[in-house]
Length: 210
Image (cartoon, rainbow, N blue to C red):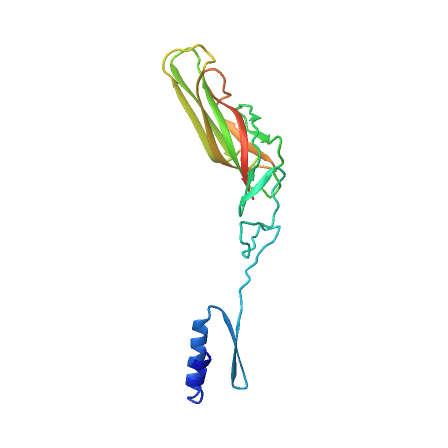
């Protein structure tokens, strides 16, 4: 680079301007300063850091996924805004048609949590008569259950009459559910489960987004 300047010395201002352009093009990020006819080139780095605990910002200087927030007890940060639960424990579920606010047990999601990754364990029970066994579960962002944000449907056909209460099918569905209050979700269902319907047996919180 020094030779470039030596060859251009005395050629004029245009050459010097060209030299500066060449220097800038050779270095990804530089600071150029001219003092008394001498050109000083200083490498620099950009530090982009918009971390704030209140806004959930991230530090882009991190070599690994990081966040300004600490995950709740029992969770480990898996990515920039997701905390994964360390140990899974099933929580019993009450099937009900009415708008219901259910708080998670065994854990305490922080106020900063916006959505929870929840596994719903569905089961369909016979009613000793041929027919469809189904249920629908809706989730809401507010405890008034006004506008649903997610929905889940579980349907099974009882093709031949089976003794009432016999388990026909069972399935797990994982859903991203918005929190309607701290550590809580709000839901409604098409029916209360039981014989001749599909029911949610239990739920498990797999993680949460903040």
